[in-house]
Length: 338
Image 1: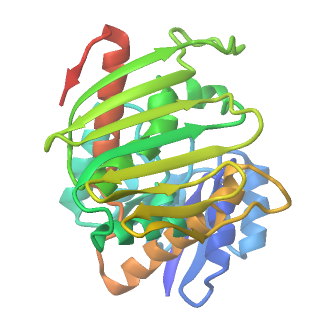
Image 2: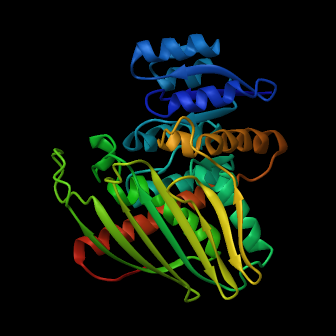
């Protein structure tokens, strides 16, 4: 039985608390920490655990095997470093930090401590994306040529997430999902990045050089390609779609009316429905609700079975490295080589 603590129960923290409560034979929540005392008290009561507003005191007083760090991005660094040095296994929501320098330090410390560390890129655990990866592994589309991805939120996230100094902005907060999928599907590292972006929405945020619409062009080391676009103005709902092209066909994940996986290859078109909207609600938690549960369950299973997490600290670092290159390309209007 794993004793777990959750730090941060604001926007996504409650999702992870509820997920852990679904697997009571594998994990026991022993503590909830949040800067807001009323939130800590509420979720501690729900999980029959102890509330804290100071995570350092929590680490000192409680017997904890695993910590879920679900705070705002700019708070990840200090918490992750302290938890790692305390020898705790860590699940960290994406991105692992708001700067490349901090991400590199996290990677160094985590690698040194030899703990289990998983990053919250839940799309890898989504049934449709998992099935697409399996098809690629089976050689259904042959040699991998190109990855395309679209990420569009119906509205902008909180101001802190849009700010490159706190949440990393569009490249860190949103597109690291796409960068992680690109590396995963294409089985290679990024060699160069070039972006076009604009500030088109007139958001009432006091953020210098805010970008809210992006087109990102990527070349991998082996010559394969990727095109990623995104914005915060889908308006009608949450829109996440991907396509992986190969020498013998292509696979698409996601459509606007529901989310199946489609394989187009020799023999024609096949459809396998893996998701439909719930109560016509397009929010990302409905699209990826099961993926959030599966990533949490996988993390707990890996600790119990002493296995390496599917998405480790290096994956978290590489996603940040690509995002940093994208930001530099945006700032300098040039191709950035990694």
